[in-house]
Structure formats: C-alpha cells, structure tokens
Image 1 (cartoon, helix red, strand yellow):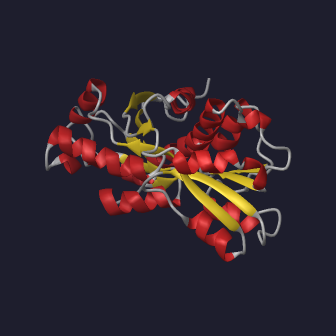
Image 2 (cartoon, rainbow, N blue to C red):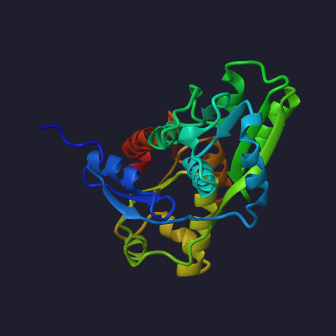
Length: 275
C-alpha cells in the first residue's frame, strides 16, 4: 500500500473554535497528525438592527451574496429568529456563494446557491457574476470587523444598490489549548495552516501571549526539527497576512478551499526547504 502523502507529519490547524472538524478529517485522511490551534471565536455582531432591517425586506433584494459559512449560518439563524429560514427565502431571491465550503453549508441549510464562482475568492465572484449588476439590489452579510469590502465597492461601481450589513463578529480566543502549547514548545509541528487573515493575526497574538516576545523562534528550526515550520495559506488575502505578520508564506492552496489547503501542505513539505 502506498504511503499517505502526509504520513508522519504533524499539522497545526488554525480554524474557528468548533469548526475544525472537516479540516481535521481531510488532513487525517492524508495521514497527518492534527493539532487544533483555535484562532477565532464567532460571536453575534454588536448590533442586530442593520441585519434585521435588511431581512425584514428580503423580498426586495435580487441577490444575497454569501462569502463564508459563518455568514450563511448567521443569516439563517436570524431568519429563524423571525420565524423564517433561508430554505424558505423569497422566490425572487438568488444566492451567490464564495467558496465550496460556503456553498456546501448553504446546501445543508436547504438553500443551495444559484451561483458559485470558479475560483473560491471574492474577486472571482465579481469577475464571473452571471448577469449585469446594473440596477440590482444586493444584500451582503459580512463579518463586523476586519473583512474586505471589495464586493460592496465593486458591485456599487457596477451600478448595483448594495446593502452591506454585519451578520457576525470574530474575535481572538483567550489562549491556546495545552496540546498546541506542547506541540509548539516541543518543536513537533511540521506545518501550520491558515484559513483567513484573521487566523494569522490572532495566531500571532496567541503565540506572543503564550511564549513571549521570542514567539517567532518557535516557527523556525528547532532542536527537534531541522527546518522551519511550513506556513500554508488558503488564499491570497491570507497569504498577504502571513507575509505581513509572520514574514513568509511557504505555500498557498489551489483551489482556495480545504482540499487545496491539504495539497498545499503536501507540496510545502516535499520541497527542498524541508530537508
């Protein structure tokens, strides 16, 4: 039997608390030992008012543009709070999803996306949108802070009437799990994966809080590991955050989803830099 591509490798996964299940499954299928490093806590927005106002007139929108599974969950939960759901959305409302995971979550909620762009990033949604945006009314639920406004700006410039509202917020967890601390201090991690820019920034904060000002040394060569921890990103904006906060990125997922993230780890760990 052929050896699994990540057999013997220890991979750190920096997803939201309670949302690492699918990533863990895919990495373990590839043979990896997975260490959870929760780097996001998903919470309600500071004010439900703007989202509630938009949902009260949902039948006036032509499209709902969903860029994350968190956004899908937040909108559906708030609709259920009002006695409705995405599965029973107005018949004239179409849904666009950025990314396979977002589209999968919408399927699970009974609201399959009408359009998913070929590349799983917001820019691809703009480039490949299936109709002219002129005169359309678009609802864009997004994270309260730290998210990109590129969708709202681009569709606004194209003549759409855009309503962009905070549907959820993400914050930094209070600390790292003991298993993650042990793996980092012992030099056991071979790669560290990031699924958003916020996971990069929060991970740097968590490492600083746990290990002090010399935390970056944990990602370099170690007494038990002769090469640096591979830093692997899910997409362009996450890679940009890696460069800004961590000084490098060793591989980027293509496509920009969890399956691509696994393959990017395989690629990074096979390069000459791993010895």
